[in-house]
Image (cartoon, rainbow, N blue to C red; front, side):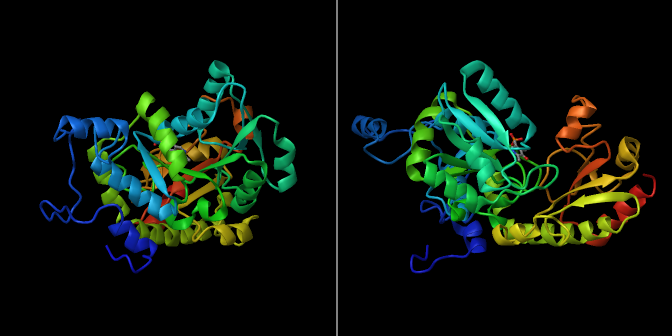
Length: 395
Ligand SMILES: *Cc1c(COP(=O)(O)O)cnc(C)c1O
């Protein structure tokens, strides 16, 4: 490793976390498919258990393949340290349960990933950790919504499905002033496009299932932050609840991350052109994409994001029926939930992810009957638009 030089993001994505296996010279990260690690002596075992000597003990407490992934994401997010989990939800639950106790309060951005919302309800009911939602449009709205027992501000930006943004510098500043931990779910952006720690936020987490892995072949989560906070989580909710990442999955994520930069650039380029195409389409009434100059928070997007991402939501004038018709007509775009894959993925929340929620409640969440979410892949742009065009002709 070249210690004299500060690497750029693309170089880090390839080289951070693993530097050629000294025993074999393996260029590629070895998969340490082992549950446990053999001590060379009783004294070594004792020191490792006491935390007096660095080294591995048991794969729930740490594994070299998983460590390489943790270090890579930490470097990309400009964090001191990282912790990997078996899913995005395992990461989110470990963070919230690790930071909070009964009687504490979480202030959340309005509009959250569905299962995060479910988790908040669960920990409120079972453990007395309360939460409230806030639109977070300006500083006053946030400060007013804080309670004396608020211990965490939890933010997603952009927010699914309206793509509304939250100003990360504002969140970071309020957190520092009020000594409240700020947690950002950065799944929609990836560290290539947005690094909340640069804006003063404390903890960043991802569903690594999405852009970090990028190939739709693994479910995983990652949390990064200060060494102290990560060490606390490692020794509490990660160790004792145990939702750890498997070595093979860590290997796939490390492999995926090597192409993060070129993937994100193509996602952004394709999504921008698709959003412009949709904005002109006669069957589309509204397009939500931060890269469109007409997007209400376009200026904030340019300030805090290095690109506008690969996710677009749009409204069909024909409502629910048009949505179902479009879903049945796509050929290239895959009808599937999840996002951030090299493949274009399309879904209709009203008939799929959010179908069990009554229409009136859905509307309050910004999920109208004709809303479609598209995760634009890295295929040739002409092929994506050709597919959308023929599918929209039926809508
Ligand atoms: C998918 C997703 C999650 C949950 O991650 P899993 O890996 O599916 O557990 C959390 N937050 C956001 C924004 C997501 O898109």
